[in-house]
Length: 166
Image (tube, rainbow, N blue to C red; front, side):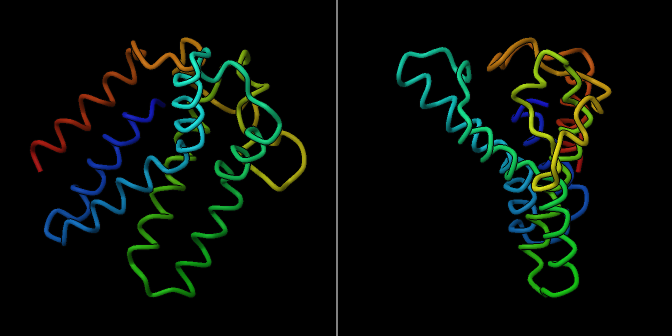
């Protein structure tokens, strides 16, 4: 999904789960819900500043960094470790929302035309274990931020309603 959709979902999830809690809990969930996209966001901004088509060329180093930052295996393991060995609620919320982002991405990265640049979601395990697992595709092209697919528009509207009503 688009980064702004992840932010809306993270905000809605935070307000729904922690509406009577300190605002910092909601902020941690919001931060974790967009963190996996920071690599692509940074590359997008750099490409735009250079006048190059955004995300058109993705080298091996960038793809490796995206593999690591989008590894459900790695961050899921981090969540388990945090749940059992840490009493820091903020870190747990951050990693839990981070993993939620990755699971949503795994389901919405279904376009075969993006298989060369999409992460496998299982780094450091070899191969492309979860490639082709996505049931939906949200993109119209690399770095195309608008328009959204009809189903993502519905998700955005529901998230906005939750944010307003709770």
